[in-house]
Image 1 (cartoon, rainbow, N blue to C red):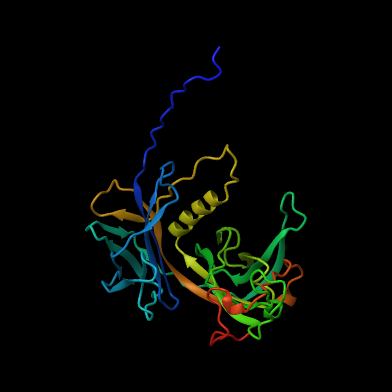
Image 2: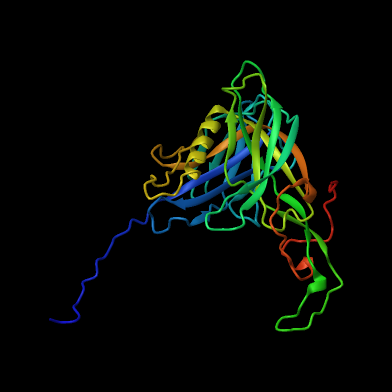
Length: 338
């Protein structure tokens, strides 16, 4: 009996999948610039799954019901991202439609979206929150942000919260600096404190409707910011946006939330391509992903100090000048007022 035998390889043909146009855009009643992002992503199961390519050099504009047009200009430092003029804001009560024409002439439009009245945040509370990690002695943790607001009476209201980029004091230890491959310290005279802007993001989608609190005062969790050992060493600042969105936008985001929160088990259904409110004007059968939203916006600026937190991650020590961290600067923002 031979110890080895020829094995005929089994060749699997994998569908490359269609490169789907994905559109993410929002205008609000807050100050500009507002953003529309265009990209191409592959369908689930494609060999290119996970590859996202920016859609460049498109013509992008919004039109309101009065016929007023506002053009968005592509950010050449972030291709596929289109920005409104700084002075453009959505007007409460008006409806807006997003219109796009790609380089190849293909045209797309959204269904109309109305800018609703913004509901103000009356108060907020921060809370340190631990997240158990299986097999680890030290839990993950972060800061939950809870907001108080009064829901308008007698109407259906839908809320969505998102963060602007955060800014925080980055504290390092240049006095502990060791040159590479050296056993002798060479302390640097500068710099201990810098300021770093960072996209902190949310690890879940925060939204709700007023089915159970119509016309009442309520408190809701609006954000969670993970503690990475650097952000909360000193002072951290984030702008939280409370957005009054449409029923259609709420339904879309709820589906996104459900998809994100799948447990990851082998018994879960595969990720779905969620259809939004964008359509092709040239091919009604084309699948277009993403959603264009219009919303009333209320912004709350929040400062968090280390002493405000009952539990924090151990401080990460960077034994060097804080300016070596990409994006860090010793000059605080002009509006830094902790």
